[in-house]
Length: 67
Image (tube, rainbow, N blue to C red; front, side, top):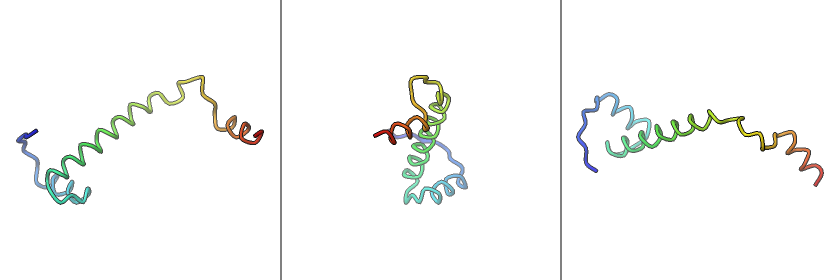
């Protein structure tokens, strides 16, 4: 989808450098993918430790030792 937006040149140059993108489009797409991935992970962190049905690392080790 084509979209026209005004991106500050310094920010775009930094994005191209950090993503090692060859084109402006690649830099923007890579930055968006990374941003969305980080936000999804942050949402998942909210649920860490909220499931009572899972075993912890110590119990897993005990089960592995038993065979």
